[in-house]
Image 1 (cartoon, rainbow, N blue to C red):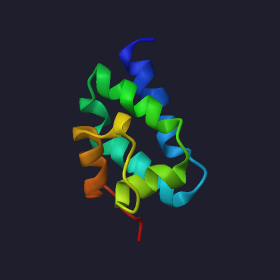
Image 2 (cartoon, helix red, strand yellow; image 1 turned 45 degrees about the horizontal axis):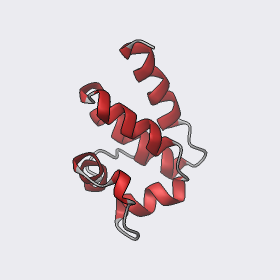
Image 3 (cartoon, rainbow, N blue to C red; image 1 turned 90 degrees about the horizontal axis):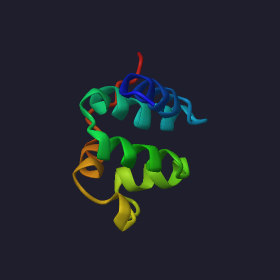
Image 4 (cartoon, rainbow, N blue to C red; image 1 turned 135 degrees about the horizontal axis):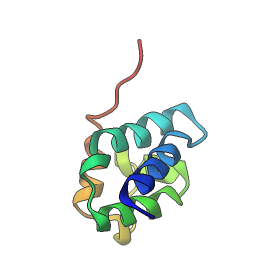
Length: 88
């Protein structure tokens, strides 16, 4: 799959999680960082999208430690949560 198609697929999956809160957190992260993701980071994000929303959200807000396979710089960017924009 070429990069553009892969990014479109990731964006769709990031914004269609099942809950509004997860959509804002995971989709917002993708909108803020998706264009700059390298191949390894896209692999990481694809794997993360297979996890349960409650787990991803707990890792992002710090109520549970992320598994070793998700620890690193990309998780730290997710944990900053400075990319979430709530519509007024």
